[in-house]
Each structure stands twice: as C-alpha cells, then as structure tokens.
Image (cartoon, rainbow, N blue to C red; front, side, top):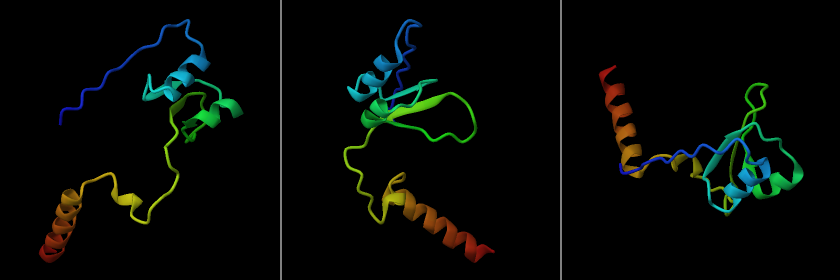
Length: 96
C-alpha cells in the first residue's frame, strides 16, 4: 500500500474556527482537538460521538451524500477479502 500519512501539528495560536474551516475546505482530512460543538460548526463538519466523558473530539468532513445502501457494512473490505474471509470461515467449520 502506498498510503503515506502526513501529520500536521497546528500552531498553539490557531483558533478553533480555523481548524474547523480547514477540514471543511479540504486543507485537513481530520482534526483531533478539544473543540466545542456548536450549531454553526456542526453544519459544515461532522463530530465524533463521545464514548466516555472528555473534552476531545475528532472532526471530519461531512460526507457528500447521506444515503446508505443495504450493503454499506461491506465497504471497509474489498470483495476479494470478503470472499477470503468467507472461505476461511467455511474451511474452519469443516475442520471443527
């Protein structure tokens, strides 16, 4: 895989709105910070859901379309990998 992540550490003087605007304008893919959620920000970006009480959030761009297909759960892996997983499960069930 030729994915090379680029991590940019923001200057301490940057404002929260600049970070959110950077995500909305495709300057950043994701921002991890203690940014507060407000109505204006939630209209232009998505915020992560809190799994435990803390002040940090992950901010991402809103998806272009919000339509979910029936097979949406299959998207994380390619069809080849899904076939390999099913084949492995089938083979393991024969062995057991």
